[in-house]
Image 1 (cartoon, rainbow, N blue to C red):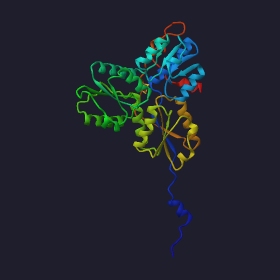
Image 2: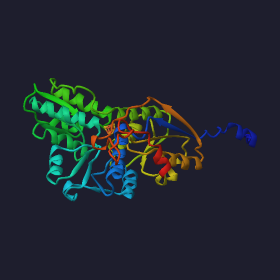
Image 3: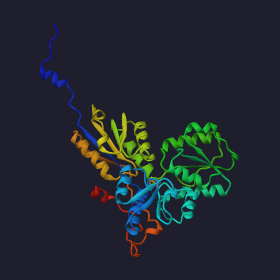
Image 4: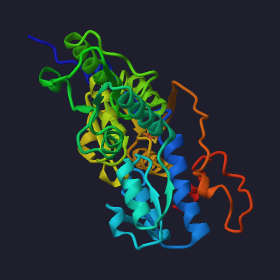
Length: 350
Ligand code: SF4
């Protein structure tokens, strides 16, 4: 007759519950281009007074946009919506020469907050087009950055939206072919697209330097490391933020069983946490740290109070402000003009 194990024996065989913990990715959150663009709008409001118009979302984050709206920024889709002579800020994603001309035609006081790393890609596009190259631009159709870059060489640029596009691309001259890319793509997917392009066009030239920016790359490297250990990854950021959405993809491709994007901590679903012991957390390049902190607070309330950080790179890059904003309202040089600042004031504001 089988013996029934005693309660003590049964408990001895039951594995101890795994400790609940959070692994925070670093770097995460604000990059130098976003920092500069947000400061540009704040400073334009201080120097010129509200309202200040902004063409498109200054950065792709709904919290940042709504906070700036409360301070007096008005976001528009087209410079045609801006009253003649008013101040308008171009977003971090950049604009085409046609938009710049449209602003001039309306006598707008334009402030260009295009990230310098996007401007670098614009310059590459202009130069290669001038030298009669056909540019294969790896990027997402409809993204503002892609529209701006294509606008610098409209006749010479062909968009490669995904690896699936490669088979159908037509080129004029295989000897004058170069690829460029959007700054916020998945590094791995882009390299796969380029591999396929090169298979079809062995003479394809590389860009002079990486177009996918340091911030996008660093955040992907960090979340890859975190995803090796995390069953669930939570990425803070908005749905239209390309680099944020890529972080979800990268987490799933590198070991996370599940990965979800949230704008706010309140969007975390209880069922995501069921049966999970390790949660990875990161944020896109346009996300203020206060939103990550709210996620950590809510996870702590749910028993995930043990937080450790995986650091895969240090970032200290800062960009000088647009030239129109390098003085204060009285015309004196501004100490912040030659560099952004860490966004600690967002934490205080909110
Ligand atoms: S994500 Fe990269 S390209 Fe975009 S604003 Fe930030 S630093 Fe610039």
